[in-house]
Length: 351
Image (tube, rainbow, N blue to C red; front, side, top):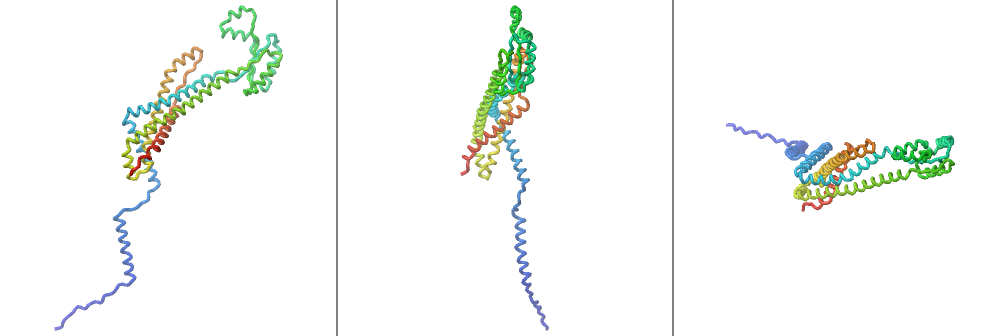
């Protein structure tokens, strides 16, 4: 009986190149599988960082505003202190502006009053007047006759009857000379030329009151500037002290944020917005205080001006004043918060 045995097929070894290719593909496949199953590193675009930065600023501004209204009494007291400190120099500056506006209608240009001799003839006075009008150093010449001077004096002094009893007009003719150049040396030279004339009795340079007014205005401006700088420093110190208390109250929160990798800018941001809100609301209250003060004084000032025959009225703080005062106060609050954070935030570091 014939016995059948299975024929053993010869084994074929794969080519060496194929073995190497399969060996090279296996790690690549494993790497792809690992990348699909594990963490993926991606680059953050600049626009994403910008939107994240803006979003955090909006969030911190809203949180600082919420914290401001969360303690209304303490926040209102701090804002009121800032408002009083700002209202004082603001009122002085507004008062100087109203004062300058009140005297703007006055004759602020120096002029020379040339008193003529009583025996001077009208034709000689007319020739002298025309010669002065042709002088390059003279801008304008106005002649006031003795009769006009007497009528004006009777009207303004209330002594008309006494002067009539004198029988003769004691007042001379006057030339009001307005110089073209207001420099002091030029005015003195022109006054000396006028005194040399045979028709001139005396020359009075009406410049002293103009100089006094200019000095008073300059003094008021410097006082308002000095008070403003001192009280601005006071506002910064108030905000520094307030933000320091906020930092101490949130010390544990700051430590946790720094432990998880929060940067100083991240920690600093809410306190800066707190200082900005304190300054802004203080500036708005300061504007309100100034406006109320102007409203209380407007009636008496108008009555005083009416007694002098003037329609002058006080000018209150307008919208531009509101923007300037609010923006300046917000900037002062921001500076005070920055000083407080830079001073006290360094002492809070995780160990």
